[in-house]
Length: 106
Image (cartoon, rainbow, N blue to C red; front, top):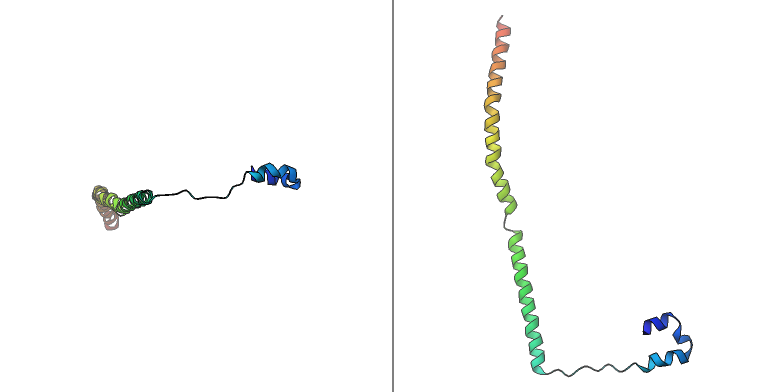
């Protein structure tokens, strides 16, 4: 209400601003007992400890090394593929060198 009245120029005429200005009161803080203060502090401490535990779990997940485990599983796969490729490749090289020697020996 107050911001809208200021934006629309309600305070340009004092008779328009009177109803808005009459509703303003001094801010008073509510009375709080010691028990309520302690409850609020305990609630806050519980929230802080819960947030710290969540951060600890996040740190554990960040450093659990899943990527390295997956990469480590790829090593035997690549070794097996290499083993299966190198056998026929060596046979082909042997055949090619034998052909080259036969052509040179003619």
